[in-house]
Image (cartoon, rainbow, N blue to C red; front, side, top):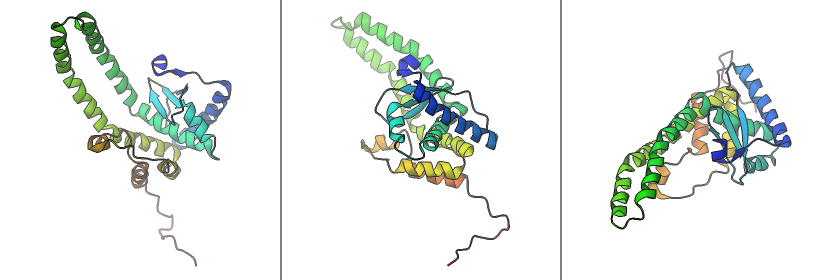
Length: 226
């Protein structure tokens, strides 16, 4: 999967940065008694600002994200929050489900490739072959539609893990910084319904709702002193 996604091992200076992120996560893990998988960090060389989880224990950062966050004063905290969210996908079993889906679909994709190789050049049979392929593709299109439709629910669950690991307020502050970069790319009703991630503002609202601040020990509400 590393080769399939174009991910590589980190360089020396990238490793130094990632080790600081790992130290931050391990300290939070110990403090909050949350067991973390043995994460292996990978790098994808692209200008896109992104990170994602894959395989059994991989978390990849794009070079675009590392460069963008290098401009911030709290670079390590922001990247640790991003990594915590991706670790949430591993702890929730999302990556195992995605990998299983890819392996299940591999024979299907190979069969379509072979059919095209055998029949796409024949004048009449090629049309029958095309109709057959479109027909057997219907369940795959339906599965992809359903997968994209629940994607936001999956992201909320990963946010929950990150909030428990780093603390709700800290992760909410990170989502606040993400919200400043949110931008609707368009695409109509279906694109809106099937966007992979919820709006950062809504993610922040849910984190604060799921993890409300604890009441003060004396039971008195905070007073504003003027």
